[in-house]
Image 1 (cartoon, rainbow, N blue to C red):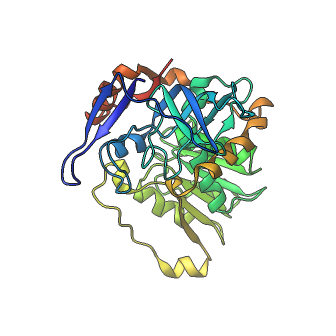
Image 2: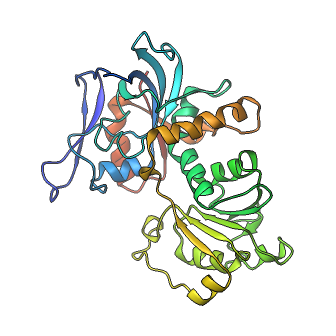
Amino acid sequence: MKAVVVTRNSPSEKTTISYDADHATPSPGPNELLIRVAASAIQPSDFLNASGNFPSTSFPRIPGRDFAGTVVEPSSSPLHGKQVFGTSGPVLSFTRDGAHAEYVVVDENAVAEVPKGVELKQAAVMGTPWTTACVVLSRAGAKEGETVMVFGAGGAVGSAVVQLAKGLFGCKVLTAGRGDKYDVDTVKYPDLTVAKELTSGKGPDVVVDTTGDLGLMGHGLKQLAKGGRLGVITTGSASGSKTTAQSIDFKDLYRLEHSIVGCNSVEHSASEMAAWLQKMGPRFEAGELKAPDVSRYTEAKLEDGVKAYEELGKGSRNKYVIVAE
């Protein structure tokens, strides 16, 4: 089969990404599925993984956390012939070959059926951002009727948080980003004090940061309602900062009973992620959730996957989805 392969001879060496036109096709074991991959996004974590930034990864390795495709084996599976999608957890693309290939093997409990009305390419870019959104909202304890303020609301994860906070968790949402199209314009109101005004002086119950902007996180923490929670999915280094340290007033933290919650999707199993995707399915089919616009993604065939990774390494801001069929 065709595949993108990452190799590294030792931890002290740089990784090498190559295209293999004749890679061995995997075979499913007990309680596993062989999926013919239709498409697989190159997520930011895929790029970091292919660059050797995850210590758990073993090489050589096919990257690709997210996938959408058709179950081809075993024929006895109730999912045989059906379109499914999913994402990684700590195994797929780290210690087991991922989805930047024509075929991928995953555990049978690590997939969800693609909802009606959702295209395979759309499903292929959803796994990591949409399950990360579920993780952060769940770990931050978002409850029905609460107000969630989302930093980076226009991004892949941020837009998923916005939709899921409303459509799955039953929350009110304040979008935050650069410009007046957001409820909170972070350029006009860098200290975010307008968030208190928009919540009748209370402040949001939950703040979700998807940007890695440490200054923004600090201001968001100060705007939280009593008992509020700040959910963090990335760090300052992700937004170009050289530091991941941030000063916190612990007196305010305990007096107002605030919480700061770290959320790392890699630490959650693929089956847990699949359960979130399964829960979303009926909401997509009912039109309560909207799948992402894949026109924002640049398609790359498997043989062009190496070039896509190289462009990302040069600082390209393009979003890529590898199309395997």
